[in-house]
Image (cartoon, each protein chain N blue to C red):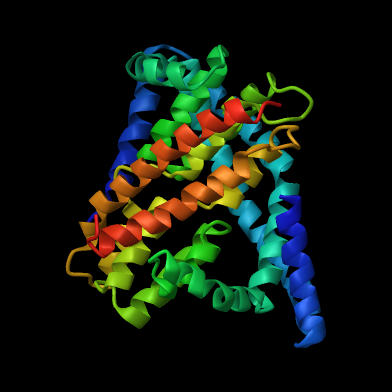
Length: 189
Length: 172
């Protein structure tokens, strides 16, 4: 992350210093925090709302029913024996598949916090890496936002992308999991 | 067309509230406890999200992104990826809302049912805001060394671009 951050900042400033106008940098530095604040407020409120519902799910043991169905898959993929971590992983994956991104984030973050209790010397564990990777593969049964946008642009077949999208993300998830499993053996901590 | 996810959200909420009520737990108290957790999490991840947004703003608004697009387009053509979708490919890992703005531009420029329009829709739906997800998820922990996470995530993202292009070109 450090390299990406440095690269973005340094290249932007150098480019404007050499070829553009330096005022642009000042201008962005004044507008960016405002933008960050707007985004943060949206995230903050949505995380608070969904964490609330998530807690209700936890306290009512609703997750136990889901777990019976999907537990074998998750136990095969993850090494952790931490029940709370497995519950949050489960909620995160289900919410992501249903396209409820706002509900998935708090569950995902809580899962990471549980998993990080097993991590040594501030190094990401295999489980943590696998879990983040599953999240970046974005498995959605129905890509609602893209379909909605296609409908607005009066596409002749807005939902035609559903199957290709599912196929592509399943393929990438599958290959991603294999890569993670292989690399976790190759790159020992 | 009514949005299916709206129905899902409504049914999902009804289900969890009714289930919790049937278990005779104090639903209000549970919800408030959860909101407190949410507040704690948000405050913990904010500095990292803030840093990411500032960098992305500088990167896109100074025009460095445009240069990167020019540099990368031969590489993309080599792998059969539509180079017209490059703006989307670069923005998507950082910001979900900006990527939908770019998708709109592509629809306006090339048409929603053109190969490029379909290709862009597929990759917009099947890739994630990779750096954003990594930043927010790791910010909640004390992890500093991410080992093979970022290389694998980028490799998988790139794979999506290639597979999707093969599907649109009907070469699978």
